[in-house]
Image (cartoon, rainbow, N blue to C red):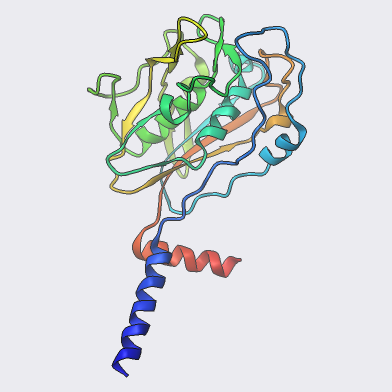
Length: 274
């Protein structure tokens, strides 16, 4: 009888440990390849791979866990946001969706978004001086993540590892980076965060010029989740400028991965719903 009880207890503990593991979301494995590169400004009419486009339109599953920070931005087709490179925004989302940030970890946007890869998976887009640069436009994503981190009360640090109150903004004023919107029942101001990279020649690695970094002091595993109201089919990919044809929204959440009894009940709820 004692052996049976011991075996049953061990099984229960094993089951609890399995259910208590955080359910971490992962990014889609297939997204459209960049349609033009820094080597050519004229080959702009190549459509993204159809099968890959259809796969990328399937929304990633919403991660479980409590939202500890969020941000929302409105993009209007009749103002300066019209010139945003939303193709690069979606490329960044494909790199970052489901990314988790461990307790005590320093989150670096440039590293997490793979901006320093030898061949980074982004298109050309306009910078603050309207020059066409690799990954131009991803600052919208770094800005939204910075806003969610600020909403969660997470501290920012500079590229030199020093504490800073807010990330470095752009040298040019963008009206749509200075919104205050209601998110999850409370007001959240947009915290502008400029990022940039460079390399002196095509055979040299990319280097950080400006990054957006914060420390996960929440004590929980955090998961990045994105909810853009647009997808690849909404964009005019034949034109790197003026990609916004209609009004859109873009939401970012930082979710705390459930642990312990929170994970247990979340798991039971998901099994019940399925």
